[in-house]
Amino acid sequence: MPKATNPILESLKTSLDDNSFVKLSLGNYKGKEANLKKLYIKRVLIKNADMLSFVYRYQTQDVTKNYTFAQAMELLEQLMGYKAFRFGLLSTLKFDEQIDFFKSRMAVKQLPASAKKLPSKVHNQAKNRKIEAKGKPYLHELGITDSTGKVYKKSQDKYRQINHYIEILSSLLKDLPLREKTNIVDMGAGKGYLTFALYDYLNHVLNKPSRVIGVEFRKNLVDFCNSTAQKSNFNDLHFEEGTIEQFETPYETHVLIALHACDTATDEAIYKGITGNADLIVVAPCCHHQIRAEIEKNKAINELDFLLKHGIFLERQAEMVTDGIRALILEYYGYSTKVFEFISDAHTPKNVLVVGKKRKNPNKNQAAILTKIQEIKAYFGIENHYLEVLLGLSNAERLGL
Image (cartoon, rainbow, N blue to C red; front, side, top):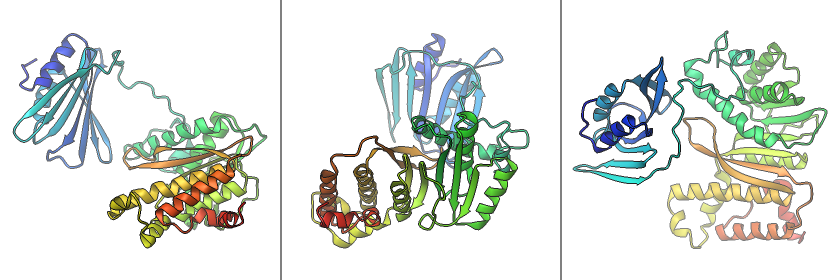
């Protein structure tokens, strides 16, 4: 291979020669190629030939290209610099090395090795998918695969999203009480990508008989999803037209799910789950207008008021306060809660997932929780949180319950 003029590429060459190379990541792209964000490089074995695989991460897709070592070194010389990728991190078994490109100089820093072993060089390793693409007619009907079960290029992100969603829910569903049939309501089902996948996973992968109802206010989507369910012989999957607020399930609700229900629609979904005594409530809130409007209206004076005068900080604070109170209300009603990041799509922003799991024993700290909610509301100048209004908790506070 030709000698590299970039210090980190010299280290890359050495690590390839002594078989200590783990990976190379490039970021902070300032080049001319539209929507290119990052570049990930790993070593692969293709037809018994050692090569470097370049995964170009764009805003809406990943593009993979494979090069010989010599080709890769030549290309990396062009891809790294002030007018290209300004940041690089090389990982080897001996050390990590970081490079930053500034306007008139570059800075190289060597760090302790973060990797303990070499990754596999096998190309196209079999992936452990919760939902396999082949043999799934509903994925074809939904436009994810062709008639043979091959995922369309344009639908790769959606297919990954479906599996990511099922991966998360699988760990939450495993501890549900055993029943002859588990009833699940999916509020705001949309076109049904995730609803169909959940039904398929429960009934045909876990062999856990389940009835799933998808609620969606757009009639054309409801008709399409019901038609697709019939074609797929998903006899216990049904979609109903309506809003979260209006919907009344004919069955006992064991699991309630609402992803991206806007603003107070999330509160309405949680309300349905709590009053239905659901074992599991899973929501990914979208928009937080109600609490933001309360904070803006009352402009409480506190240690954070210097932040809340900036719109973007106010928006983030409103999100945290809204979802934080939601979690406390769930705990008040006997749910253990978790709040964590949920990436609904590989190329969309991260969302918060609020999960409530019904406890076997009632919460003994209800009074303390109500006090905490009141303190939070007073601190931020909030008169009422919509969920506490739906549940009548405001009255409970005044009555000293």
